[in-house]
Length: 359
Ligand SMILES: C[S@@+](CC[C@H](N)C(=O)[O-])C[C@H]1O[C@@H](n2cnc3c(N)ncnc32)[C@H](O)[C@@H]1O
Image (cartoon, helix red, strand yellow):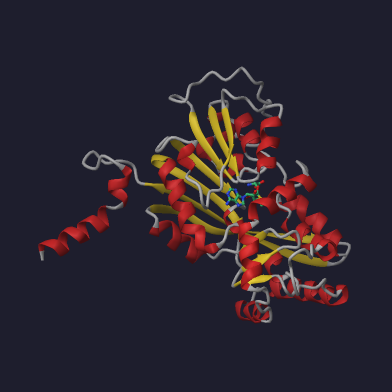
């Protein structure tokens, strides 16, 4: 049943988190996992059904009660190992699933009108021709510059490039295998794309993307894979690449998503942070922490909302709810009396410093 439900949701959601959790019942890797045991399938079935029920009731205190039953049983050593091996685990993920796991993000045409030409904005469902390498007519100065962070195998950049012939795309992921898949795509064109390996939590994007050169950043289901201690550093990393007025579009797993509620015992790393059976990790975000994080790093938050999708399994008579969080932020445009984004970002602390030294 679990596998069946997961298959259905995979098609709907565009991400395969539930499929992954389901797979973890049978493929939980035991290497280095110490005391984590394979869950008892009958108990897990109960847990899944309870999770579905609790999620549908939508009562926050019930949900919290359900989540509180889950204790952190993973040692600090094991947690440190997961952090150290994060890149390797994602690389294995792509070795096993190749390009067939995530779906093309065609829905971005609807959600990102800023990135789309007028015709696609007017009719997001229209057919768009694949890109033919060698036919890009723009230079970096007159192109719209898009940076896709945690690009996986390119499920965002290629649909966006088809939809807007003016896009130049930087695409980065820390899995070398994923980046190789991007470069191997028939639509990959060195004149309009640059794919490179980068760990956005620990390496400066400016090694590959000039500072202040990007119009638009997309980051889909990526921050959740990173340790929460690194979230702010990731934001700083993005900030430095943006042009004044540049935009970040973010979509990821939302707090109380069914995938969070149905994690089996022994997968919790911290509040709202879990490890899947394949050793990749997943965090579930609230609206309040998203706003706090982006604002603390100098972004202006324009949109911050949960996107909810009800999925019905008619065969099983189950109604399930997926919850994603969608955030759109921008950095302030340069004002004539403030020559750089940096100055604008630090203006508050600079003025406080000034006031203190005067008093
Ligand atoms: C759930 S997948 C999403 C892939 C893609 N964004 C999509 O929506 O199809 C998460 C991606 O984030 C990448 N990732 C995780 N941590 C990263 C990091 N620190 N730096 C760069 N990429 C990272 C993984 O390799 C993986 O490709």
